Length: 341
Image 1: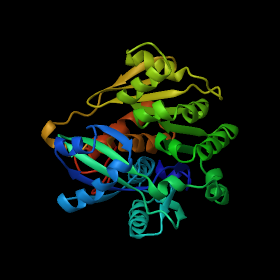
Image 2: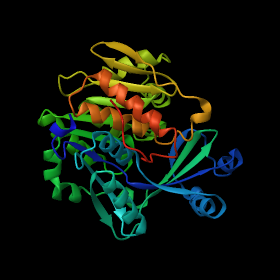
Image 3: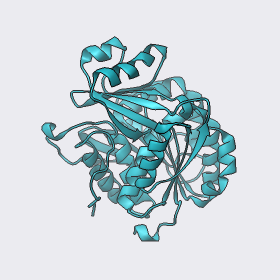
């Protein structure tokens, strides 16, 4: 039960962003060289897009950043404040204030590093046919310092479970590694998400340094296939890929559990030498509002059960519930009281 979980039991390090969401046409994606159902970091050619979105479209602002989203969802399920702690970097501006208010309202104990020179990061969420294209302008989120981590290390020591989306590999992989080492040394649990194909392509070195410490690895089928390609697994069979990821070098004797989602197809889980399939909750096409954040919500539901000591079946059941809830609305908005049982 959540009442038995200690404050600060779950710790996350990530990139806090303010999501700017709107529905656009394929022509708009093409204009900025973006693909549906993908996630990238903004380049100079994308910078004018944010102003164009605000001027020409009906946009919605929601707190974002993959890791922070997952922790907000976990807190929503748990219903007891401050069980999750989140670190990341923001600017000193109104967007930072909005992020802080939203995160705290959802029960997350937020401890932001602040950067006076950079603005709070934003992420364009461009929706076409229920698919989302994410283009993140990290700005201040790209400035997280190890100094902040060291200053607040007591909050790391308090935690028993750790989670980071792979996106933070582009920011401060040393901080991630330090937390992962602590998790290993103290026999705690470290969780990680592949997050996007470009991370396996272009941030392969820090990813592979971190991987031996990872006890639970999350991702979707596209990310798993790209990881397989970069590791030269020589197979397109997703069940075989999941197995091979689990068997990558591991520091502790605990078997790495790999969880790979496939949209509307069953989720694959590799545990104890076998792959199991878990069907998702069916949903009608017309009931899908936005797939943005569904993966984050899935992880949040999973973590909410994991830190309570529940088994894989319960973790997946809750993950399916939170993902299903999320895709029925825009972004990772939380409008109701969780009724997961």
